[in-house]
Image (cartoon, rainbow, N blue to C red; front, top):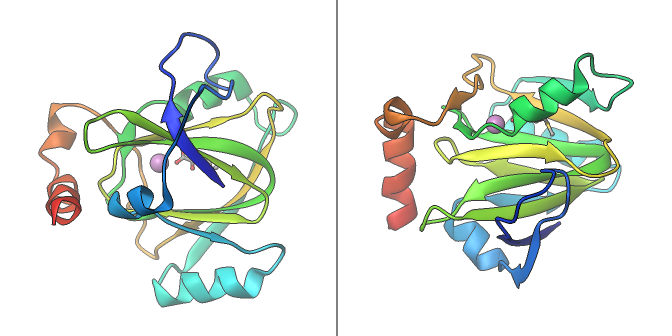
Length: 172
Ligand code: KMT
Ligand code: NI
């Protein structure tokens, strides 16, 4: 895992877009993001899922050969959105980027690779993209009652109770 400020320069979303300014683990924690590294150890993943009552999971292989309409899907993952549940992702192979909004509404880019597990809080604005290698295999963890539908950013999501709750906790 590596976190840095997104450079905001034009170019394919799958490029690194590394401004060269790193973001500290403390700042990620302030945004409410948790990160772990579990190399090929599903027991740790299972323990996290159990402790947060995340009872469902699936695996997704995001690549041009395994995901129909790959280019379109990759663009969709990159639409800024939030969820009403935590988003928990465990990278099984390959790599990719999650961008999350900072307190000042700038993008923090988080590079994840095999063995990385990230938990994003409910209500945080974010987006995802594969990298130049076009290959991410990930486990997606869901609660029993899934509220993981992406809600694209707009006036309504700014008023979403999960968004308001996130901001309240981030500021404290
Ligand atoms: C998301 O929320 O954009 C995703 O789940 C992307 C696929 S998992 C790496
Ligand atoms: Ni999401």
